[in-house]
Length: 91
Image (cartoon, rainbow, N blue to C red; front, side):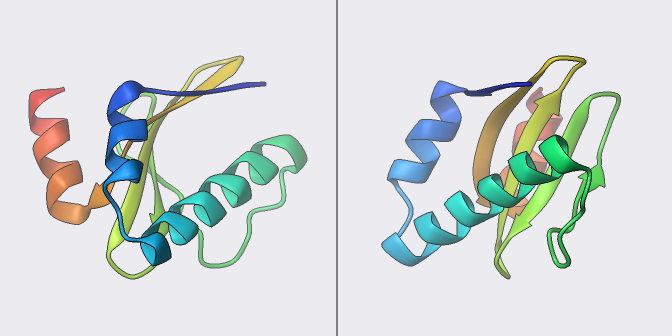
């Protein structure tokens, strides 16, 4: 499995507080571990939003949006529930 990050994801993470950056990085680590091992960590909040678009929780307020296909996962956006919703409306 290949793991990629979109420029919007990288930009969004740079703008987060240090505490929220740690939460996002932990959520991404847990998600990649899940896709490698098949063991779903408690609290990750993995949710299929559309055909190949998924969401995970990164703390109480932050979410990470990613696209998964057969051999790659691309992290698209890290942000609040509202930011994710706005992104999906324009996706």
